[in-house]
Length: 231
Image (cartoon, rainbow, N blue to C red; front, side):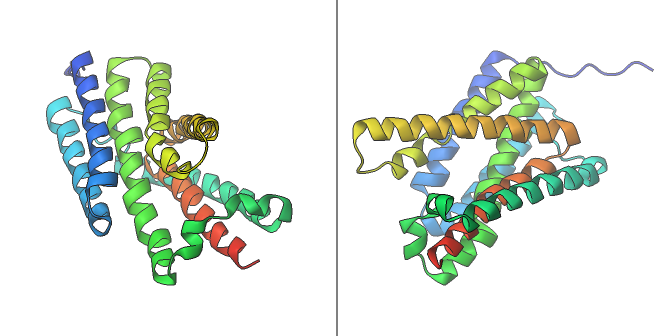
């Protein structure tokens, strides 16, 4: 029985997706009021998934959302999350590395805000949003248009540049050379993280794996910062 060929993805379509992602970054992280950012980002996430399914024809499997691969994603993601947790625990306990977790924003945050960051804002507003966009929609589209290596590299580099605005915010008030160093370092680190998350996604064929690893990285680092404040 002949299989129906999958629709091709044009360069214009990829460029349009990247432009839409850039706009979504500004809308979700800058223009939207802080209290509305999580629901706004979830709305953008749903819109991009609908576009990927209806306009590109990506299957749930291509998006990393097929149910048959969920268990594999949870297993691999669980291992990755446990590894991240162990590394963060060692860094927080060691006095020579604990200072890396110090943050004035976290120190000035209320207990309620700290809890919401760990349980809601980071898992939904950051991790689920970014993983669905980058390792779901974007990676799925790029895999249709190019080789796996190119798809991983391009999606990971774009993930790195996605963090330019947060890096500029972190470097606010610092010298020009320091700002450049912070931005370059942030882009480099998050690009490498993007490669790892893409590998987890492709290895398990499920978004669950990078989602768990990403949540562990962000939420546990936040918890580590809170613990560091009290030591």
